[in-house]
Image 1: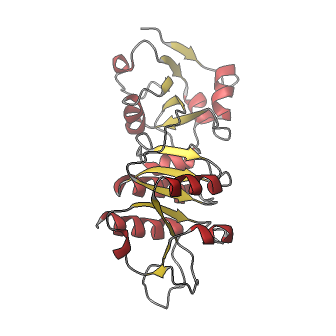
Image 2 (image 1 turned 180 degrees about the vertical axis):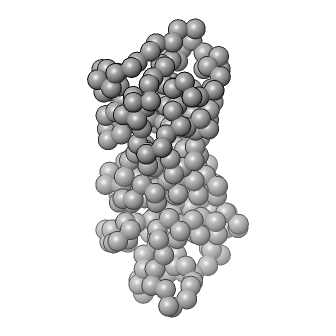
Length: 251
């Protein structure tokens, strides 16, 4: 088994990996034993880097995955957290087709990585197998997003596309477009999921501060508003989205 050793933070490969913390358009970096073990199941790992303090079973990673023994200093260089586990993997981004047999989550300008990660986990939990995000949303493979998903992103279809085109595409494929506009006095607005039975749902969630762009209002079939205490003005987008997806899942 070939294992290369890297001791310098100025190593060219380490410089390349460090860039993945901000440029994750083609590859991304994973940290931690559990997440990397999950990645192994999906065939996305290009290389694995580890320090002496880890007890990973290298034989499980096969000859096709490059292996690097690194120093603590190098580990700190490529890590995105203060205290790392000393094991990293460089992964390929494999874009999957939208699963048109299940519900779809549509994200308009969701900016916070923690919210994005939580929504990916909740979507997985509640049967929304595909997520479509507009170009302005935070990247799916942002290191903070990946950590927040708790390894639930591997089996999801995560797609970045123009939302106007995607909403038309979903409508053409017989999806019920469900919006989450607040303060919309409209016949479309409901507070229960009774209209969702036996339908494929495309749920749209919007920006943390501004909600969904008004340009999508005419495209929605139903506007879902969570029934809650009047003392609370609004909910965090990840919490609201999780509640709605759970509600739809229980039908």
